[in-house]
Length: 476
Image (cartoon, rainbow, N blue to C red):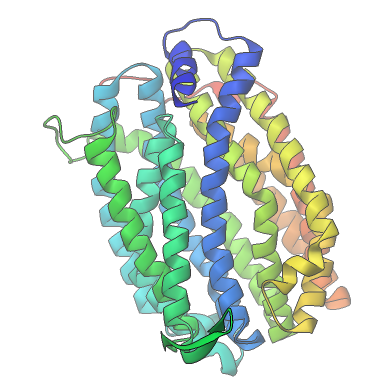
């Protein structure tokens, strides 16, 4: 399969004809590992939530309260990495591996410094943050402790993601998936040891004492952080030393970013940072709207979002493929091929997420029961999931279409469209519906907004302007 994938990617770079069947096959070859990587990433969050959920609604609410802020920080890191990875995809598509490695080195220095600054900011705001978000007194301490540990390990998360997205944009999808699975397994082990206290457990009738640190919510953050350190180290070793196309140890080159490289990076990253503030800021606003509803509503909202992530996992995996395929096609100077890949990935993404939505609707109570032992949280979360099942096709369209735009370096207009959708539709509707319908009112607003956003993004890629990019392959 790897040889087949490399052969098909070679057809793009060499300017040779690639049939529709080959395009679909290449898309599936790339999206399979990408979806697996998304699954592993979602599992990290799911494991944390389910283990903490066993401690009760208050512990779950403490993580849910700060989750929107962690999303903002993650979004800044992801956007910066993509500013360089899209350039790398264009260089690889043009057959310029020397230029691709130059971008890799320069981007590595930039994201490292940036993540250290962001981590310091996170540490400084960790104590007052839960109060700013309107949290109740009983969950403030755990929420603050969780965010503090998250912030301290943020540079390792950034480095791991940077390595992953660079490999994916070069066409290597399998290795990041494998490493994310390793991180997932390590997260389970570390969380099991750090969250719970030393206790007597029974396995197949045999009882023994299981050691544990008893750190609760803080143990969940620390377990994930340690797993991220190991994952980042492995990702960097494979990327910088072992990868056949991108390993930079084989040649000399500067890590100091050039003006051209930085200008191109921020042409992509700048609008994505604005979008991050637009989107994640809306999520913070939604937290402020939901927080007064109490611990049960906060926990149900947080867990339902985590459970829903299994549904949109194929969409984000397909989005990774769209970014890679559109980026490499444009790097090779093949705009019509880029357009074709955007449509193929869009259709497959919508189909996959629609199928997953049916499963989510059917098994919503059982899915929520895996995350919480509180019957009120489970019941409310299941109702939210079943409502949201009708938004997944639109959400899929927005995810994949936006990812295709990123591959082309087109991020300004999509950012504006997302602002219109999230703030003028979701938040405004939520302000009207939540006082009348509680948490369900917020999810009703989200249902409408996701379908509106999907329509706007599909309209964007149906034209030609999104394919006009400044990220042409030139010497750095």
